Image (cartoon, rainbow, N blue to C red; front, side, top):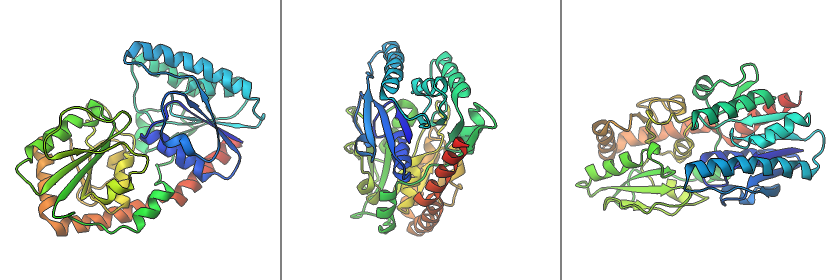
Length: 354
């Protein structure tokens, strides 16, 4: 049996990848997930148990409730009376209560690390120390991630994120279109946090307001987005199934600011590429491993307004360039097919079991 553990069930990259991991295995499993939120993990094919967790608008109160949630998680695992050979699979550094449980009860622990940094700094040091002490294996989503946050050399593996099987099937049947009803459609899916480049996205849209043939779509994560937006921006509803959004896009953006956060992978970029959509991404971290500048898209620092706007205009005005990038993007995405991801995850699970 594999016991998966996650904290916040939303529509972000880490639960999306956990859903893929759970879908890739063929043995009995159980999922322990925090009680605050609903999202991608609601319908995974295994037994689901919740443990108490609440978020707050206060950063410090959230920290207190988080620590309390890990006590609740530890207690829930004890009460579950799991098989002695159960493998504990901790998704992100956050649900450390499961790792402590695994170590103290002699069970093997896999950490699937998605974070690059957490605050306050002392909090990150604590989580890293627990992961180093308790883990049997640690998975990273890119080599850049592994090099920037080393935890336990000798126990680390790089397993790049894969494309969800259902999404990959839909993407394979979709032809890329440079324009949709005469419009060049620029799409960004991102959690509405400043470090994700939301301000840069809105500024980009505003700078191109005179181009009536270029429109912008913003798909926020959990909680939606209620702030004012430029007239050429449409805010989409949060969704567990983004296929329709990717199908409608001419270009996919990830504008994470590298001075505030280094992307560990960039899953929305890969998903967009699977649909044959060119991309623009930050020139650091995981995206720089995924994308070759000028081939599948461009690597541009989102703080460079002129370069960003220039690239969007160039792609909007050059259909032939977009079609070349589309072919390259789709070809690159095939390297991250569900089957390849399943093989790599299975190999790590077997290695953890010894």
